[in-house]
Length: 200
Image 1 (cartoon, rainbow, N blue to C red):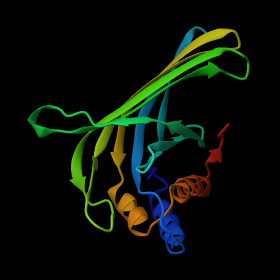
Image 2: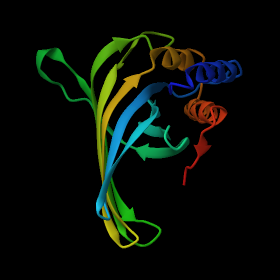
Image 3: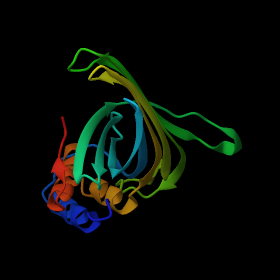
Image 4: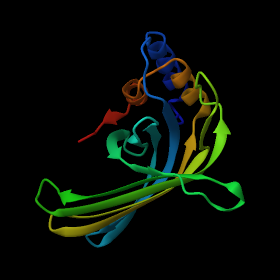
């Protein structure tokens, strides 16, 4: 999935799948290709984000594993999304994952965050036992976060593409892996490649 981690991720999924015998959630695994622009404190910086986005098709819960090669670190974010299926022209149906969030950070400052991922549904073999599934082959992602840190206001803008990792998605579903096991496989593959888990 990440450039350095594809083989290890497949091995870990295979090992976990071999011991999964109970009924589990259906998942979609997408590879992140995102760029985050951070503006604040008199500067602007860009961060390239890889890793994976794992979607629980049963309840819409999303775990995004954000890996940053430049620092060899990763963070896992749990996102509760609203899922909708807008119908467009020419018979196209879209899947849209949307999230808005507001609250206070650890310093007591206001934080506002929103993100949307949108893709056209197509028929894919995602390893379901009865028939194929309808899911986007890729999703266009846009996210924004506004917050204050150290007395300075910041804006984070994240954009890019999430591309389905069809082989891993099919294997995880066919072998009845749980959502949590798939996310853990992603974390383990990064750690084995020298990344540090910096999840808050």
